[in-house]
Image (tube, rainbow, N blue to C red; front, side, top):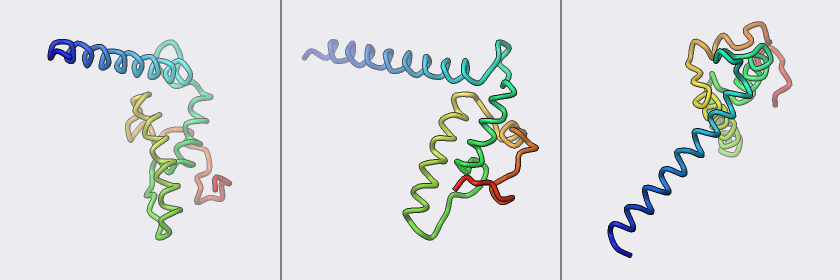
Length: 109
């Protein structure tokens, strides 16, 4: 295949992946945000729960490598959602602030 054709194919593939990612991020925003781009009350509750369940604000370390891998997998999910919604650290800590955390006896395990 000619060099120009390879570059064209790469550009087409990159554009397709970029558009697909953009549509996915738009879907996340449509699901969790109102028309002004603010989190809905329901999103606040769900994201607060996911933050805690996925250990979005604490270490995932565990001496058992299987448990550690499980916690890292959960955290990866949280980081993907947080990236899509542009959730920063202060915003993450405000999510559903009145909800009990795992250390207070939540049943997330």
